[in-house]
Length: 143
Image 1 (cartoon, rainbow, N blue to C red):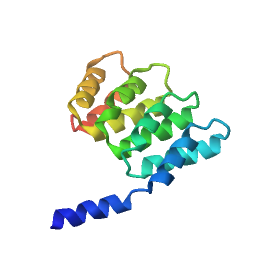
Image 2: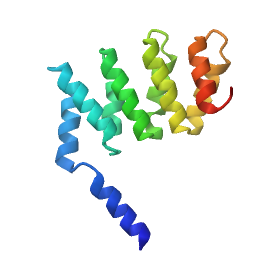
Image 3: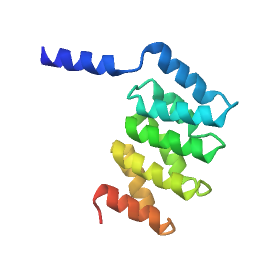
């Protein structure tokens, strides 16, 4: 019976269906960067697995601040579904360094096989930015 109460408590803490879908809609609306940023941050903090797909889409946004907020949200949600998108951000040498560092931390937080394998690959690449290699070592306790 305790498990039932824990599940009910978790479920009741999620945003209501209409609210989460309004946030998802706002995160994709390109009219106002400020509103989008707020929606992306709220999605990341929602604890709702329905937010993952939208945040993954925002990782491809032209605005680096939107991408960073989406990456941070995915780190908070820790969904294995986001590993490929986060690896794309980490492996993109044109991505701003702050976003690559955030992607590194998000992958380390997820700790799935794919996330760790991707981090290991970046860590063993001698051409990788030393700051990224250092974060990987720190986050995974390799240093």
